[in-house]
Amino acid sequence: MTARGAIRVLIADDHPVVRDGIRAMLGTQGDLEVVGEAVSGSDAVRLARDLRPDVTLMDLQMPELDGATAISRIREHDPAARVIVLTTYDTDGDISRAIDAGAIGYLLKDTHREQLFDAIRAAARGQSALSPAIATRVLSWARADVPGALSGREIEVLGAVAQGMSNKAIAAHLCISEATVKTHLLHIFAKLDVDDRTAAVTVAATRGIIRLGG
Image 1 (cartoon, rainbow, N blue to C red):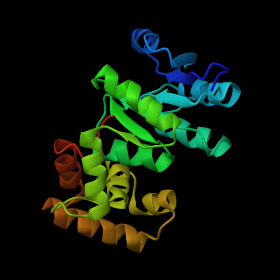
Image 2: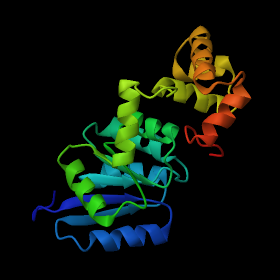
Image 3: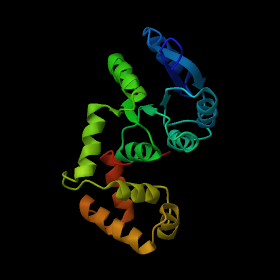
């Protein structure tokens, strides 16, 4: 924090109108200070390293490096870095990947401004900052209490399938065996009540489990 105790915030979003809006909102709060703005994932990594903000607000769809990869690299350099995802994407795959990368929070861009302010303050204290809907979904994965819900690993496998990766490529990407990939796929097919990879991807995209097209 700065000498006067303000929480130092880095905004990472490639849309200038969004950055301007967030900066204007945070400017209404005496304890929140915008110290930098990143226009790409690689820019966010560099500024996070140079500015050492208390909290970074990170969009997922970023040029050069996507948000989740940028979060991972920021955390590699500084394991104590606190990053909140602020995005329009709310599929299980997006949420899972961001949290696995080390995000301390996940909010949607239509979040009420007061909730955003509270989330930044919570993150600065080292507390998780998930919107209620996101928190419910994360809890359901942990407890596996939703019939037909895919596990985090199954979401990763299905996301790789959606990218056109073979079982061998998925195994290498996730550092698991091809046999394990096949087992995950069988579980996915059963949970989604489908018979093949194409149908699994289609159903998962329809249900908001994964996102197609980037």
